[in-house]
Length: 453
Image (cartoon, rainbow, N blue to C red; front, side, top):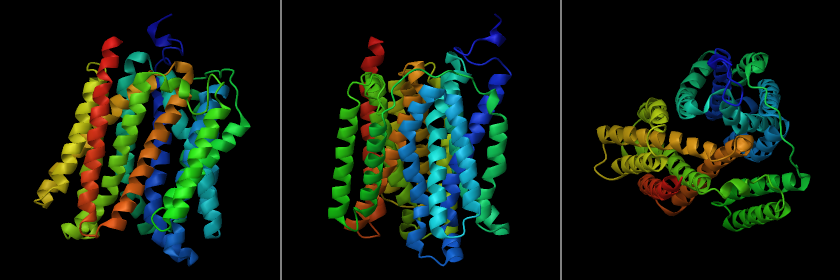
């Protein structure tokens, strides 16, 4: 067999491999852009439906909650039925829900459609890395994960600008309508992905219900924690009970929904914990930075938006380089260096003297550090799992990211509740630097596992 006709076990043959990667990256851009542009549309949606601004937040929250709920079950379904099939089901659901969003006659219908859209997005996020792993040979995994991170960073950075451009010439439903032709294109090209058979595994409906309750209670509790600490705390406690119940229900399952079998591998366990810490710091800083720019540096919203762009631009620059470095340098050193750079950049921004040039220097360093951390960390998380468990690994990667971002949002809410608006951004940035520093220390701990390996 010639190298160009390599079997699926070591990637797809070229040029099919390149087309498959293009399809997967296009879908990720679609999902990431949709998350980024929805925030910009909230004022227009509120005006269109004559709704309270606070109610429109559920247009964003319902999507995030659905993604959280869908990640682990979709990872399991991908392993059972084949990653390509479930991935394309997710794309189809996302596309249909996008059309429903565009034609939604009321805010409640829009919120429900966004929830369904999030279920489809969760399938895409859970199984993107599994499909990539079957599309490319082992030697290119680090590089393609770097390209993947670069694509997501560019889409995140471009989202607000694209949303602004669409809203300048069209009404907000077009923000969702543009997903439809792109989704159809992905479905038409879906046959290019690797046709991988599923494996026999048990899927427990009771475990699925416990998973839904776990994330729904946690998300609802996090939303209420600042305004009603007692109710919020009880809901979060309920989510912990649901997690314990889920683990008990699947205690004898060799491939559980929450991949406790994968957590037995030190490298996987460390990668997940470090990812949660890093994304907690990232979300803290992402929420704090606009307030920092407008209240401490006295910038206009337009200026603040421009000053926020260097971070994702730096991530997009370093991510593919980090992917290549991950093939040559130990993951522990790379991740520790990246998290340390992230912490350093946040300290430069958060500590006086405060001025525009120092802010730019700090955010560029933070973005470089974040990109340097993410690519090798995601690579080792994925490669620590057997190939047939890539669905669970990809789902856990997304769960770690969203869990960290939720913790960051909760932390920022608590900061706003205890510190004046003038001092809250600075404290949040210092806390974010602290979480990044913890991620660096955790990453250093994995070096001894790599030495043993």
